[in-house]
Length: 511
Image (cartoon, rainbow, N blue to C red; front, side, top):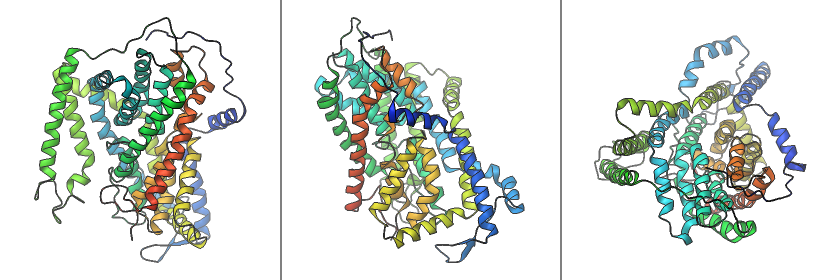
């Protein structure tokens, strides 16, 4: 896109005072993979000290003492050498993310995502533009980080083409995607990743406990509606009026999908309906093939346990349908190439996952996780902080870490082995504990200084206003961040007080 900036003169001193101190401190923190390597080193030292003093934890189920094992010992060294690869391959999010990336990657590389977004925004009546853009932005979580890169610039272009301020469109979309990362009507990569981490942490207490990607769906879906209304009101009543009228001598138009793309989208929609209908036939009727063989119901069924494969086959089907109809997929080689290109983007995750898998496995093997969980649970019981205040403290801790660690999954990798077992011992379902973390995780994403996407955001905004700086960006996003912060805590408190389930068949408490 050509430069649109009209270069107004503004006084912008973005990096001063408290914000600059946060940036300086945050930039000194190592990469999350290095951070977890340091934590493994710290765990080794702590486990050796505790083991030498014969410290033991009381197992929550058997009530027998479990002594701390040292990583710095013959037994620890043998465990490292024999279980290193197994720890990595058994890391639950690893396979899930790779499979989901193959499906989403084919869908994106075939051109479906771009055409679908453009087609949707051009069909919106002007008075519903803001709300619809926000809803589309929430739904775009299906593309994970790709949505952060693609959707807000399109929203800015749409606003500008309608004579509205492009910053308002950009901010509304980015808030929904980034500060509202927890909320979605669909089951997306985040659900898969976090549920895998939660499952692994929950099995410290109960080896049979499994948290599925849909276990927070009720809360996530309700949050979409509440946050979409909130975002629309903030944009139209506060942010956009404060920005004033945007003027530029150059014209920008958001490209419409071609007739060929429209035809491919319609064909893909028909294929999607057929796929869903077939899947329902395999699940809904009594005695259906994907029902629970023991109970005949849906809970605990192969369908529920196989949500990730179901999503993969759905995405794969849509990608193939669109690509073949459009012509972007001509043969099997094109399919493999598109999936391969998508997987290339996982390189950073694969490295980080290796280190995180070793840390979690070591945390469990040394029995330090059990010690921390039982000690923490006893402490909360002794000070009578076992309910909402304790959960809110965990949420606040997650947000504090989020100021310096850009990856929410990395934060949950750090917190889940401690808080999931601890709150399970207090009677809470691990999926509800995960829901609490998610409600306290994303609201401030848009105002993080330690943000890998910040340079990209600034470049997007500079296309409209050349002197845009960090201060301009922060002042634009701060109303959304603070509002989302308050709304998420209110929603979680409402959920807790009324004892609502976090997802299908998932109560708040285990007993």
